[in-house]
Amino acid sequence: MHMVPGQQPQQQGYGGHPTYPPQQASSQQQYGGSSAQTASPQEVAAYRQLLQAVIQEKQLQNMIPFNDQRLDRYAAVAPAKVQQYCNRFHIPIEVGRDLVKLALFDIVLYIDDSGSMSFYPDRIDDLKVILTRVISAATLFDDDGISIRFINWHPKTGDGQKHQITLRDLNHIHDEGFGERVIAMTPFKGLTPIGSSLKKHVLDEDPLPDEPADTTLGILRKVQQGTLQKPVLIITITDGQPAGENLGPNDTTLRDVIRDTASKLSSQPRYGPGAISFQFAQVGDDREATNFLAKLDSDPFVGKFIDCTSNFENESAEMMRSVPPVDLTPDLWVLKMLLGAIDASYDQKDEKSSQQPGAPYGAPQGQYGGPAGYGQHTTYPPQQQQQGYGQQPPYGQQQQPGYGQQSPYPPQQQQPGYGQQQQQQGYGQQPQHGYGQQPQQGYGQQPPQQGYARSQQGYPPQQGGYGAPPPPNYGR
Image (cartoon, rainbow, N blue to C red):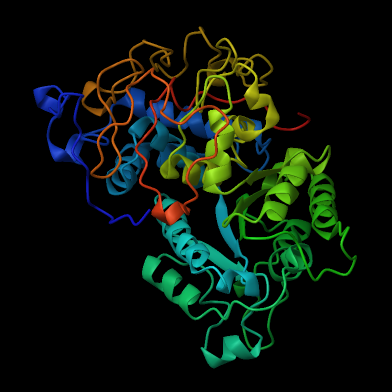
């Protein structure tokens, strides 16, 4: 999907006329309301609740207490920041609200630069789009930016010295243009030792002789020293299964690295396994890579510490087989990639359990087919308890909406609910089906083979209130 940032499709109903009420018809309000709109206390409280839900799910209370002032700061700026992102990338605000959860994490983008990527230029195009989205989302709330590491290429190699790239350059990246330039100069050669390089270049990265120690990631070293200040989300982008590790075709290096990381985190009371989250996302359509990620995601031990997102085509087909079927779009795929490792409601939707009757992304917890209501097993003090489905919300927040219920957000920032007339279209395309109707693609059929960067699908109907807190992730 060749997207042009800032270009907004016209919102139309089935007859070709805008379905917004007059006060919502301006182009600035199509995806989240006017940028000048002041957030209400209820909206800020709702964002704070989303942040608390992540802390509870990932068991991060020792790193980020519920009364941490950072939560207030993130929640206060979230309405405007999320709206900014939604307006730019044409994402419904109901989905975009979950982006606030990324504020709690430092993000590392761990990129497959193996030779197979160079044989398929579309995979590199997809990588550039993903990189743009990750940098944009990561810098909404945090000035730290993101870090980039590669499976093969490292600044201490000849290629890094040739381009005068240092570790400092690969940290705190805010500039989307710089991210694309790094990809452009990446040699894309070699094999795919995902596990050993994850340990060497990310988790246990050692300082270089000519650079300060604080320019290296060395995440596990910081854990052991007690100096890791924020949880870390490591997003791996790959087009194939591991190759070039030391253990041969039945290699378990990646699993062993994740198990070892979880064990080390568990031994540190301040942190715990939730301090490092792993996301593995596929670009390209290599079947062996798809099968490898599926096995990794369903691994009885490792699976509960990670999330795996298959390529857009496979994820779309999987979501069509869920009950009820969900018409996945590229934008929702990106959000799934960003949030799946830190929000179980996104992770659960592409697993086999999603083929049973269940709620789509973000549906209220405790609803028929959805996970148990959050708050049934909480340890919050009374003033901080999270809202279970059908319970009264905290902080003066209004009830989160179910099907057909009113949104707790101000009217100018509401998106039409399930069953209403507004049709989210693809860029310049006519609507393919109405809300509540089945997409033209039959169940179980493979969608057209197209990379993320070339898809032209519209948005799916949003079915349920986004942001309902998920159940704890561990032990599932």
